[in-house]
Length: 265
Image 1 (cartoon, rainbow, N blue to C red):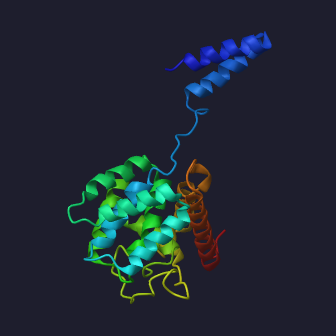
Image 2 (cartoon, rainbow, N blue to C red):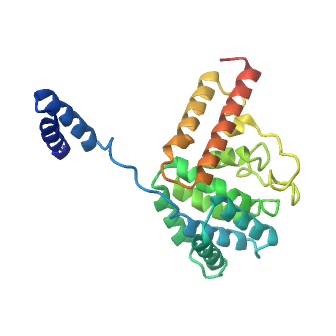
Image 3 (cartoon, rainbow, N blue to C red):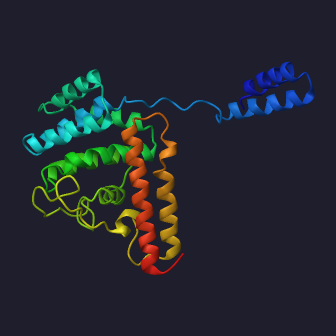
């Protein structure tokens, strides 16, 4: 058991207040420090940028060649992330590295896993950012699906969860793009490729079957809101916070729609 924080806190409390109350108060604060409550969150920053764009380059190249649509999607992501000149240079350089035939995808997958540190909210955001590249050309390519699944396996994200993330952005059929291939043509695959956003299946968003019991739907909703809560992200770029907020809104909207259709509160 850690005790340094308690002792130091008690001494500081006594020196400040000069009484037993101050000692006890300081000891309590020291106890919280020992438990990790008051310790600063690790700075997550933008250390994911280099491996993310390296993976994006490999993903774009996986189906044969890198298209103009994929390049535009990568450039749009750089803009949304608000990268400065140096970060943009690194992103472009790493995207180019990822396109090479001998590129080590496993290495950048390991880097992204290390950045996420087992946090599902960060894993979901990484996948969210990559979906525009996955669907940049329209139909889902088998090679891209295999690469994304490799990243998902490393991050501990299931096919059903990936289908939910995809549905929140308007990509893929209602059954989810990770269970079956999208048969729509280029330019109609999602919010960035069509004038009208496809309907979002609320059950796919919550990851439940249509016949699920209300208690199971409520449980799935509470779990998702906990995993996608933007307040838990800490020090990450504003774009990631905006995406987390958008995901939370989609989850809320899906839950409210199901409640209205099923007639429970």
